[in-house]
Image 1 (cartoon, rainbow, N blue to C red):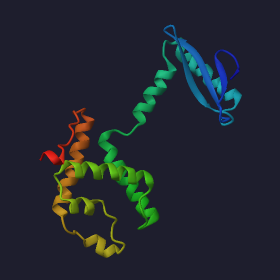
Image 2 (tube, helix red, strand yellow; image 1 turned 90 degrees about the vertical axis):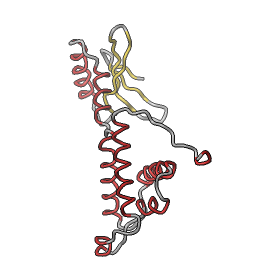
Image 3 (cartoon, helix red, strand yellow; image 1 turned 90 degrees about the horizontal axis):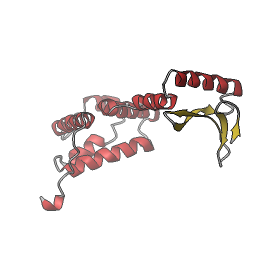
Image 4 (cartoon, rainbow, N blue to C red; image 1 turned 45 degrees about the horizontal axis):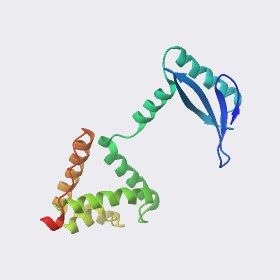
Length: 181
């Protein structure tokens, strides 16, 4: 750790990363604020960020807490999570054509697949069809409704309702064990 002045220091990590930090106190507690990576943030800019944070502290604000709030608010809510996943999938499909899903999308797909299967509500073929890759023939894909279409529509509504309930803070109830049915 290399100190500068008024709480500003450069933290050198074991991996060799260099990170600007500001050590300050609020309500008698020591706090730290990340200001950015060196050399992306040069020393004069780090000092400007320090001075801006010190101005917040002088007004009774905690800049570290404000940063945490901004980060939390920037996370997608459960309401738009499905839309974000769908948009990510559509962009991936447009970019890669009929190639397989990207790993991050596959993980989300596996989560949805396990929820749908464990619910015991949906026919396994309807679940597989809903998560299957699209037809490469554009005309056929446009007119293809396929088997289990109505069930797949109800399934999509169920998923949407599930995400809405999570957003409202509903209790998550485990699905019944298949052996006890």
